[in-house]
Amino acid sequence: MPSRTLSFVESYNPAPLPTEDLDYADLPVIDFGKAGTAEGRAELAIVARDAMRTQGFVFAINHGYSAAQTKRMFDIANIPFDAVDREEKLMYSGDIKETGSFQGYKPRSYWHISNGVQDQNEHYNINPDVHRKQHPKALRPLIPEIDAFIKHCHVNIVHPILRLLARGLEMPEETLVNLQRYEVPQESYLRFIKYYPRSEEEEAKTNNVWLKGHTDFGSVTVLWSQPVAALQILSPQNKWQWVKHIENALVINIGDALEFLSGGFYKATIHRVVQPPPSQRGYTRLGVYYFAMLENDVVLKPLMESPMLQREGIQTDRLPEKGKEPTMEVHRKARTSAFGKSEAAKGENGVDIEVLNGVLVKHYN
Image 1 (cartoon, rainbow, N blue to C red):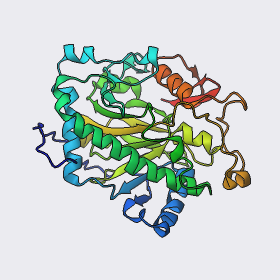
Image 2: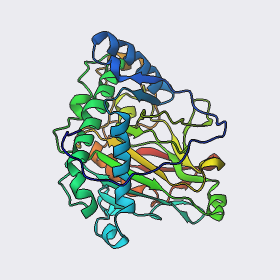
Image 3: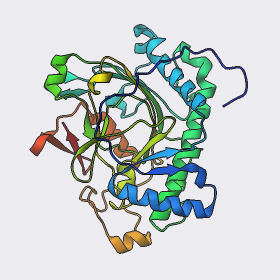
Image 4: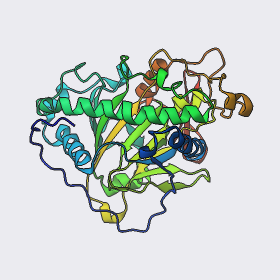
């Protein structure tokens, strides 16, 4: 973070930790402090490989931001919601369905959850090219800090994870990094998001689901851990489990893009957001995420030059028809435009199904 005098930012006070004894997922930990040596990366590559083959999620620590720097980013993340009025937010809202791109605000009540209930989360999205679009007045003095944070997420967090996963495929470390270069114009994005409490009637109609179970569609998602328990992942045993908060840690998962490139060797795990436990109800849930995308022209088909994939073979039924695989740009636009807006076929056990550009997409209610 720059050493210059920082702009004043109002402090955001998060909810206290939950008091309930929740069924937390037992996720492995990636210690970036070990990634500086070949021996350390070899050790971490095994952890990352095994985790992304099964649970699809890991914690990460020693990621390069101090607790104070992370707290500052959460304070900044709250500004688009509490320091910008409704009229100005409308000026910076993105046309998500038409463009298939997250830029600017997604307003509350934009997505349909179920039984006529709309979502109650609002988010603000920023491209790595922070000057691509203008930002609300309250954010403008903070753009240099946001710019540095985005670069840190991409170069110092996503790229090291991609190197570990490339090793898991028995490929050169830079194989996946070269498909997701920071200096290339791209559609990765930093997201500040705020969930607001809902009425009991809405909770009843949605079975307490705030965001349907889904896979992310990019390559790597970085979530900066926060204390409100609401994120759940679908375990290999087909059981929903909570993700625990670890102070100044990251929660990292992979999306469709890496599942497709690895032929299903790595899994894009289903996850969802639900109503927090009773001790945390009534609080807002502020999130800081970085959604990393492969470069637009990367074709989402298996990297068959991988020795691991040659031995293991294709391990997913979600791949599009051979020869008709979409690019990252096509898949991203289809998933972005359709989420919460398209009509999916009703499947079994509350799982809705649709096919987008030949890719099977499931929504877990």
